[in-house]
Length: 90
Image (spheres, rainbow, N blue to C red):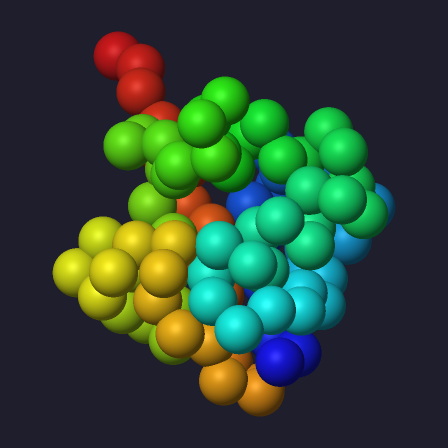
């Protein structure tokens, strides 16, 4: 399934685009697809065990994937995935 993945500026520089197309039946599959095509992006989206980082929120059609199975959340053709990293400072 093809989906559009929207990236924040800090990650978009790794792909040279603010949005990229990803393929997969689940969010985890899409992340794996992107990690293959953009090797520097993979470690920013998932840990060494292949799990999502707690400080990176990923939305599937405006719904937080943590409440829909995490990386196992099903992706349909045309879905939108948005990546939002935590920002800290003071």
